[in-house]
Length: 267
Ligand SMILES: NC(=O)C1=CN([C@@H]2O[C@H](COP(=O)(O)OP(=O)(O)OC[C@H]3O[C@@H](n4cnc5c(N)ncnc54)[C@H](OP(=O)(O)O)[C@@H]3O)[C@@H](O)[C@H]2O)C=CC1
Ligand SMILES: O=C(O)C1=N[C@H](C(=O)O)C[C@H](O)C1
Image (cartoon, rainbow, N blue to C red; front, side, top):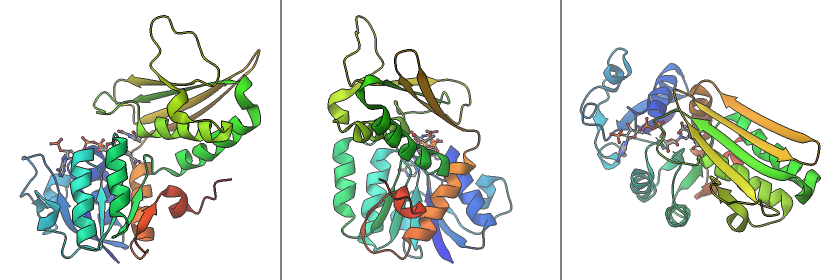
């Protein structure tokens, strides 16, 4: 049984993770945090719309970390960094789903992983983690004669753009082609914008209640491959986050991703 703490429990992801954890016999939800003042201090069950569970929503992770084994964080990058620091100082494991972190923040999180085990992944669904490998292999087979464009669509409330998943898909394409992602990524093409060889285009669409859709287009002369993943429920991410929590809880300190959790060996 994993004693679990969910950070961002009143958010779209936090609610699903907490709800599924409460339905599972592998987890005991012993704590939760939130920034939204309408949630802080209330019983977690009450904010989830079920019977009270006798666990209050805290304002800070340090208020509830003691009894926890593992923390799951789906908040924002500033909060994530504070939560990683708190989890690692208290020798607890942490699963991070938050996206939109800059390179410097990710570097700080990696440094903290010498103190505690951390799983960080921009997408916790099985399908997208398989897609990462398919895309890398496809880029390797097709080579630079095929132009790669990545298109993602998410709900109107998403705060970061492009999605963390789209960025990682771009990195996988670059790995497959043996080129630098940073030097070849081209975001939201506008104006006079002829296509350079090896460019990896990334476009972000926002609207409605779209849970998460990613398409990678490989466009050649007179033929095109398009590979799409569509999530129609946040539960695919929430289940992946819980799987990561079960996996990471007894691991040694280190920085892990969903390939480690799912046992996917990247070629
Ligand atoms: N890895 C994956 O598989 C997935 C990753 N994500 C990522 O997860 C993150 C959250 O997504 P989502 O749930 O849709 O976003 P939401 O905005 O719905 O939820 C985030 C919640 O975290 C709260 N929060 C902010 N700061 C703190 C803090 N210091 N302590 C505790 N809680 C805090 C927010 O409160 P307030 O609104 O008051 O700021 C909000 O309730 C995003 O970065 C998203 O991209 C999403 C889906 C899947
Ligand atoms: O904010 C979201 O909703 C999602 N964010 C993740 C990302 O940025 O890649 C994953 C998923 O597509 C949903």
